Each structure stands twice: as C-alpha cells, then as structure tokens.
Amino acid sequence: MQKSLSFDVIIIGSGAAGLGLALSLPEHLNIAVLSKLDMNEGNTFYAQGGISAVLDKKDSIQSHIKDTLIAGAGLSNESIVELVVENGKASIDWLIENNVAFSVDQPSKGQEKLHLSREGGHSHRRVVHANDSTGKEVQTSLSDLTVQKKNIKIFEHHNVIDLVTYHHKQNDQKHINGCYVLDTKKDTVISMQAPCVTLATGGASKVYLYTSNPDVSTGDGIAMAWRAGSRVANMEFMQFHPTCLFHPEAKSFLISEAVRGEGGLLTLPDGSRFMPGFDKRAELAPRDTVARAIDHEIKRLGIDSVFLDMSHRTSKFTKNHFPMLHKRCLEFGFDMAKEPIPVVPAAHYTCGGVMTDENGCTDIKGLYAIGETAFTGLHGANRLASNSILECLVFARQACKHITESFSQETKLPDIKKWDDSRVISSDEAIVVSHNWAELRQFMWDYVGIVRTTKRLQRAKHRVELLKKEVSEYYSSFHVTSDFLELRNLLTTAELIIDSALERKESRGLHYTLDYPNTDDKNFKRDTILTPK
Image 1 (cartoon, rainbow, N blue to C red):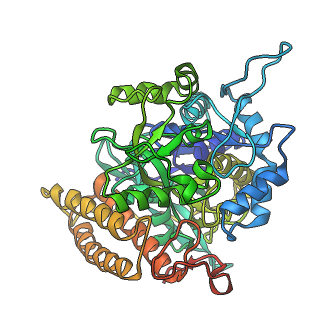
Image 2: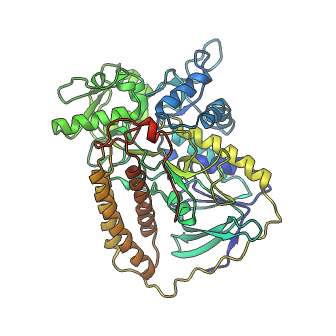
Image 3: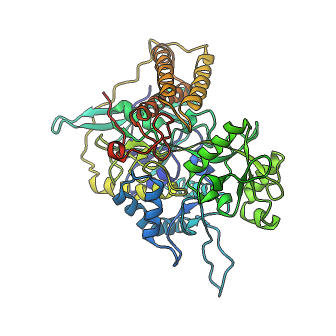
C-alpha cells in the first residue's frame, strides 16, 4: 500500500450533494472527491422530476412548509423544514449561476420564466425542471465545473472500505482521520487522510429487488458511519416510488412523478381508475399512499402491473413535456403518447440515514453527512416529491459554512495504520457474493417491503444475521472487491432497516405493518434512533 494521500477535505460521493459542497468550498482548500464508478453515475444523474422551490407569486414559503410537514406524517423537524424551504430560491439561483439550464415557459413580453410543474403532495406548481431529465442536467453541469477546479482532485473508480477515526486526548471525543480506499482499476488499497470527511454517498434502495436506483446505491455512507460509531435514525422509512416501467429489460427505469402531475391516470387492466377510491387527491396523493394502493391492487387481482395512462392528452403535449420518457418507452415497445404503459412500485429513496445537525455534522468530529445518506429531520416519515436535490444543495452550503469557519491548518492527525492484507488470498468463489446479494434483495422485498408484519421482519432479521456471519468469514479470508464491499454495506443497512421497523409498533408514513395498522401518536410520534454498541 502506498503512503497516505493527504487533503484538507475528502468528499465521498459525486452527486448533487458532493459536488455542491466541492464547488462551494474556498479554493485554498485541497479537496478530494471520490466516486465508486464514473463521477456521473449516481442517483442525481437519473433524477427526472425536478427541484421544488417557491418561485410563483401564487405560492408561498408557508405553503411549501405545510406540504412538507403533511408528507412527513408528524415526524419532520419544523425548523429544518423552514431552513430548507427558505433556501429554495437561492438554491435554484446558484444552479443557474453554475450553468444549469432549466425549462422555461414561452417568453411573454420578451422575458423568459421558469416552467413550474406540480407533483404529488404539492398544493402549487413549484417544481423547477429541465424537461424530464433534471438530474442529468444538474449532474453534468456541476461535473463539468468541478473538473476545471485546480484545488479539486477527482478519484473515479475508488470505493471506500471504511472510515478511520481516533480519540482526541483533550476532549475524549472521536475524530475523523480519513479512510481506506479500494482503487478498483488497480485493485490496490490506499489510505487517504483529512481532518474533514463528508459522506455524500446517496441512499440504500439497492437493498431491494426492485428499485429505481442505479447499482451504486448500496447504503455505503450509512453503513460506514454506523461501523465508525455514528448514530442513524428513521431507517424504517424507505420510500417506494409508485411507478417504474414494468418490463424485463427496463431494470430500474423510473416513470417520473411529473407524469401524474401533468394529468397521468393510474388504471387497472380493464381501463378503470382506482386511486379515487384510496385518496381524495387520487393520482396526486403522496407517494406512500399511491405505492400502497398499487401494491394492494396488484395483489388483490393477481396481476403483474397496473397502468399509467397519458393517452387522453395530445401526443404533442406528451412528447414536448416528456421527450426522454417517450423515447425510452418506445425502445421497450410502448408509445406513452398513445397507450397506457405498465408500471409497478420500486424502492426509491432512503428517508433515514446518518444523524446530523443543521450543519451536516455527525456524532464524529470532522465527519459530515449530506444528501440522501443523511438524516436531517426534513423528510420525517415520508419525503415530499422533489425535495431531495433541494436538500442536497441546502446542506452542501450549510456544511460548507461550517467547514470553512472551523477548519484549521494547525490540525495534526495521527498516522493511519497500514492496510494489512498479507494473510488473505484472492477468492475464486465470486459466486458466494453474487448469490448472497441476490438472496438479500429477494427477502428484503418479500419481508421488509411496502407492507410488513412482525413475523416477516423477524424472518428477515434471522436471514441477515446468517448472511452477516458468512460475510464476516469471507472478509477475514479474502482480498476485498467492490462487489463484496457493497454486499457488506447492504447487509449492514438491511439490518438497520429491519431493527428500526421492529421498533416502530404503528403504521406511519412509509412504514406500514398489518400488525399495527393505525398511527400511534402517544407512543411513536418520535424518531427511531439507533446507537452503535
């Protein structure tokens, strides 16, 4: 292993949160940005819908706050919600200043105005977007700027194995020291050192069989922070997006919330609508309500999918508003402008995560968490559509301020111990990893999915414990690989989801259990906080 690389700030993750922080930090700081694959491969790139912000005169900050709190089902931290919503316009302005091109209405009186769409749970049109490829526009614009910065070094195809910490003698507090990193191209382990490390690794939806997320969403930051000694919270609240395209080759292709916002109707195979029977807001109800309704109808009728119908809108309207979606659906044999398309729910967003304060600070001094990997208190028991990239940008700026104000060049870090793999060998049994990965995702979908029971959760807990034992033995015997590291992180995250779900003996937001179908404000109107032993 080569000598430790030293930086002022290490950012693990290269999506909106990670790059938002990297671009906001002062240029005199030496920054490393780590990405498991190419720097554009992450949840931000694939986000379709948009970013919520109050920009219309008919809208208001209080209305956005109210909608967020309603979606959060009583668990959102109101002061955090206010912080995020009040910084909505500033976040959009910052993106525009950084070359992000959003969709605009037809210019009136010579001035262009941002086009605002409306999504489920929102009482007004307030979602800024770049057609139906908002994430791609944000990601590529920020990436292009990042590679131009001389103080930022980008490490693609670098997968973090674990965080390194130390106890400070003066305050007896755990401090961050850096991390061990697998260079997957060279198949070597290096150490990186910095007094400030930020987790911006996204969520953990790949723990489920069906997900809208790319393959990199394996809960890495959450698992690493947990192993390092940081608390996590509200991991039972995993958001399932109601509408992913149902096709054997579509994998994780999401059909944006904005389709329903622009009039898309959910129907059964016979063409009849079913959402009005579940919620007065029908197709515009929050995601948990819609996903549970679809799951109910699929199981009740024994069908493979329900359908999303835009055929009542003009073909021109659909093609203009959803050019990417229309094109992709055609590739799978569906013309969404003329016919209903088959859809199913899929794991989409992790509402819980590493516990932080309003500055992104975790329990470990110098360790920050921002974006989907963090638990800030914004989302509560359910995320309001299009609040995710907004959260990334706001907390990137919050963390930037805190890092800038608290950073000291005088900080002296202890040496990181050399990575010792002298007693392990290369595995010729990669099938063990792939088999365990498949088993984990299948039983998490079956037992810890949209509808849960205590017995299902206990069964999943038992299976996780067995797999963790196998993985521990594997870890001590063989050289680490990227696939193995992701499996280890997914198992840790799965156990946190299960433990959190077992602790919450009620149904609230995204957590629905048949054993406790009602909401219990008296005993459970609180966050589920897990503390490492």
